Length: 440
Image (cartoon, rainbow, N blue to C red; front, side):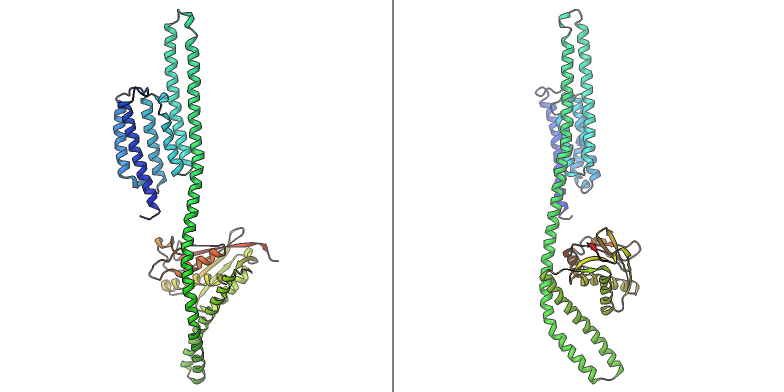
């Protein structure tokens, strides 16, 4: 069970306890407070209903976890609560019962815990039940008044009083009904709106906490990386001098080929180290530059060809985005290259080919979308939710490259989404905001 589900589990247990309290309240009112509150003496039928409700209360308390993260099941339980309350009210006085306002309780709970459709449905159901009880009590009073009129026909002086009394009670019942409807609507609209705002604020706070933790991890990784990069500068310079000397002293073709591969590896290390220095300066000084999307793709292709010549890239760019402008800094290219490198490695491990597809288009009018698809075995479903947000242990590593890429995109106002491809592999979808201006 995740930490996020613990408060929800506690609320479900409290709701089950509340049902037990409600059931005990019904029993107590029938046994000890019928005369005190003017309740109608219930028939035997209500006893069977209360026994059935007791079984329902026990079941809901024992299996309250079943409705966790299940809005449909939770709504069904609240609907049953409404039915039991309406049945109890009907047999103990109907609309004249002093506790008729407890029909609003399931509406209030649904307005806090469920989507907006749930309290509206319960409001309609409760209003229908209350209307039926109002109609029933009105018909009973009308019938009793008619009987009273017939018995008092010879007495002309008392002939008008029952009709006037009937009109007063009818207005009173109409006012009760109107008051109930207004109260239900206030709960549905106001409480639902407040609960929605609270949930949004909690989601924002949770996102900010996760972002803060992620930034702290990135800061620690950045500090360690800067220290190690500084320490690597001297060994790389020494290796460069040694390879240059080897080229001058060896003339064997096989050895020269090996030395050439060593030089390529050193070139890659030196370019990466230089990019790291530039990226550090850019991030520290908050430098953002405008770049056309087609120029960005050309630079990315050039870097991939230089550092990963074995890569088989299939790049498709929509014509309407080629001339659009995106705000970048030195961290964008390394972030994209890290995703492409992961895709190349996944494709090679699964199909022994370094194939990666890149589709560039618009996800929204002013939002660039880059989809990087590999042909690997895919990422486990339980890792997709956390990969990119936290460091995750997996057979391939800790997911640090994806975490750093995600952070770089967020700094530029973008997002990174990972999802499995229907056929095979994984899609990394990068979204970046586009400038409103277009170049000619």
